[in-house]
Image (cartoon, rainbow, N blue to C red):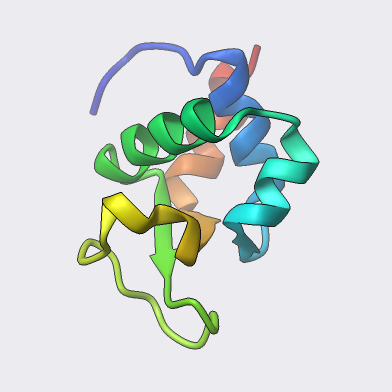
Length: 90
């Protein structure tokens, strides 16, 4: 995995994802705009730091989700995402 540090927005997202959170809750809690949130989520998902859940939060659907409709899903940090964030948080 990459040795880069998380951006401030990525760190803000991961801090909210100890438990499963919907896209709209993340948007409200982080104060990030739709585009920034979407791009950061996709980056973190692709790097294995976030798991994607169905709209009703009943099951993990990672890595098979529709990135064009990312607002319909919920998210939770993976163990590796939480560990990396705690080591490299800004």
